[in-house]
Length: 262
Image 1 (tube, rainbow, N blue to C red):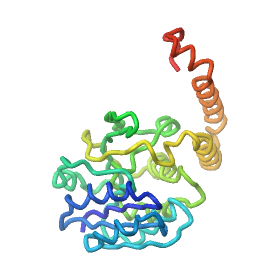
Image 2: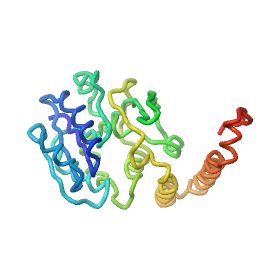
Image 3: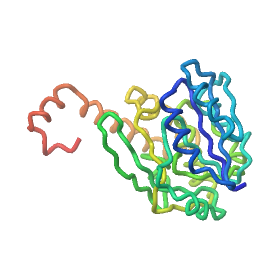
Image 4: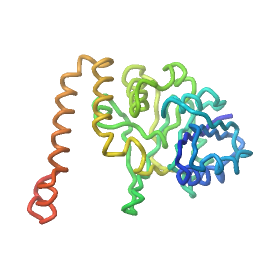
């Protein structure tokens, strides 16, 4: 078996319905589908139960967070590669699964581009990723977990996702695997999945937590570069505060700050 697709979910009934319905039509003999639910009480389990015969593995039980749930899925997966399409995200209806599976040619990480969708605004765009991500790239960004195929062996060798983090363990994994582990990777200039901007990592309320967790990892693992990272991080936070201040937003609305790139 070449591929294990894993979906984690907790109390997101509309999201899990959308995700499951997008994946099941693409099922093939070269893949399995696992669903890890955190003990939902909002009707999610009813949605999952309706299609449980399509899953290779399904469990609904309390967990300690996102990465605990993802690690549960990794441990149960039987595929050579793992892809996370978490609750609320989807595989596009026009995705060519045969083409995608043919791209899984032995590299440790194989990543595609990604459609980013804003359900509220009703628009989307295609996010392009670099062919050769380096430390400088990971300081500011990460690879797309809904568009990245990861060898199970690599996740096991890494020690699974760190459950000490709430929202950046996948970022730390990608960064460490490429920058320290020198693992092999390949970028495919195509996209097959959609990430919706309503998850925990996209919530503006979690912006400070994201900065804090990333800062802690840089300080511990890349101490030589920490002072430079901290300075960059502090500047970005201040710029964000300026951008979102009531007075600046009002002046921009009036057209007085068109020249200000915030």
